[in-house]
Structures are given as C-alpha cells and as structure tokens.
Image (cartoon, rainbow over all chains, first blue to last red):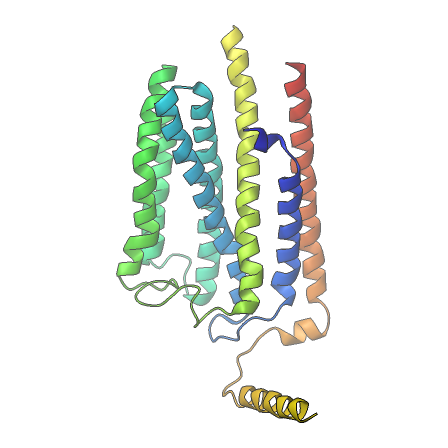
Length: 224
Length: 69
C-alpha cells in the first residue's frame, strides 16, 4: 500500500499521457474509409475502458482480500475502485456514443456492444444501490464484496465475450478483429499501448486519492 | 555502393506501390499543413496539464491532513 503514497509513477503517467496527446494528433494513422481522422479516437476512447478494467480488477482483488481477512480498509479500497471505475465507464460510454454518431450514424443504434455495455453499467449501479441500502458496516462490506466478485466476470462476459459472438458494428466483433491488421498498424501501437498504461495509472491514482479521503472519514467516525 | 543502389531501388518500388492506392481517403491533411492542428494540441495539453496539477495539489493537501492525524 506504500505504492499509492509515492509520486514517481504519477509523474510518469502524466508525462506519458502528454506524449500520447501530442503524438496522437501528429503521428501518421492508416487512411481508412468512414473512419477518416476519427481513428485517432482510439487513443482516447479505448484507454478509458482499459482504465476501467484496471480499477475494477483491483476492486475484485481487494474484495477477495476483505473476505479473507475482514480488514475494513480493504473494503474501502474496493468501493473506491468501483466508484472510479464507474466514472471511467461513463467516459467510455459517452465517447463511444460520440464516435458512433459520426461513423455508425446514430448515438445509439442498439448495437450488441452498446446494449451489453449499458446492461453491465447497470450492474455497477446496482452495486452502489446495494451498498447504500445496508446500514450495518460489516454486513455491508461482506455483501457488497460478494456482489462485486460476481458482478465482475458477468461484466467481462457482457462487454468482451457476448458482443463478439454476434454481428456488431464495433471492431472486434463478428469475426472482425479489433487491433488487427485491418485497422491498426505499428504507428498506432506506439501511441495506444502507452496510453493504456498511463490512463490505468491515472485511474489508480484517482481511486487512491478517494480511498485516502474515505480512510480519514472512516477513522474520524471510529473515534466518535 | 551496389548494396545501396539496390536498397534505393527497392525503396523506390515500395513508394511506387503505395502511390498506386486507389480512391484517396479524405484526411485532415489541409488542417495539418496550415499548421492549425497545433492549436488543438496546445489546448488539450494545457487542459490536461491543468488537471494533472490539480490532482497533484489534492494529493499534497491530503498528505498534510494525513500527517496531522
């Protein structure tokens, strides 16, 4: 846990994102019909989802740790990771809708990817509702930890697996590879992969800030 | 010297192969050539730098509060 109090990785993440902002607009990209310059959205839309996956994964790890040890701090990490993940989820959805408007023709075209992403979003909204509906602290922590552990694989299946088994407009579906030879090349990879890492780090940073605030609140309540 | 000339001719063939692509796809080449894309980059870099500084300042304030405890 000492890691979240250190500064070097935060500076590194900010520098890498600054690099992707500059390189993302200046480096060459494949010239593709329909997409045109919007292919650069890949550098900003996809990292939102990767960042979300990173904090949700951390959240599940801490939910398991909580159930193993019963340490209240682990529950606080789990809930703040979910909160931050939900924020990046909304960013991913909105940027996706924006992009869809100009490439697929509508903000929402009931595409399998969009629909299952919306359903998975409700899963995590239900997590927040569930938490807030239980007053007793340990019960709340335990039930929401178990819910979180179940919600995560369902979310992964909904977003990553099910849309790929049917026809979808989104890349990576219906036998149409995402990040494949068709729509990506190495000029894009040198920007995209650093962006994945850096945005994940930013998400972890925000989650850690929220966790530290919540820890102070928790300790203050404990004294009273 | 021979190697270099072979390499040069291969490179030229490579460029020629690219030049033969059909129906050009419209990109924002004009915007870039007139240099105005740099304005956009400057804007987002300023915004992101501001957000980063803001995050760092929150981090610092939290550290202070944590030390008081």
